Image (tube, rainbow, N blue to C red; front, side):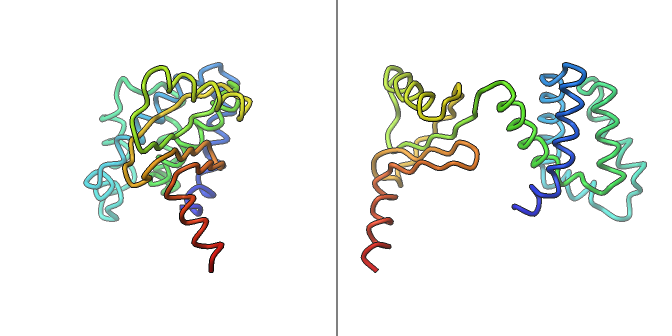
Length: 177
């Protein structure tokens, strides 16, 4: 996974730099998300990864599927990825791009795993505490995970805050051994 991120980073950085220059980060974000979703299908990956199909045909096929969803620069970006055999990096590129965009906007996308669903008030309160802790505006995606037993697990980029009962039990187990 980290190897994919390493290979995707220069493409994501270049795309973000260009998006900032042209003041089109939202448009780029949408285009990358669409391309990433398109290539997340296993059948689609098998098709575009088939060595018997020329790069030109793959490119033409993808551009036909993306018609109306991409602007000129996103289309050129897709062509570049096809020519460099880097289509499999699209999900990582899109993810890194979103991270750069969030950092630039002073916000962070946060994955929150909780043992029990939040009430609306509890979610607002938790988001406020996270914003204070992370010193950024927080966009939360909350998932209920009963295996946590209790508490929460938060992932904000590279940072992980594990306040779950399961995490505390694992920590105690390591300390005892």
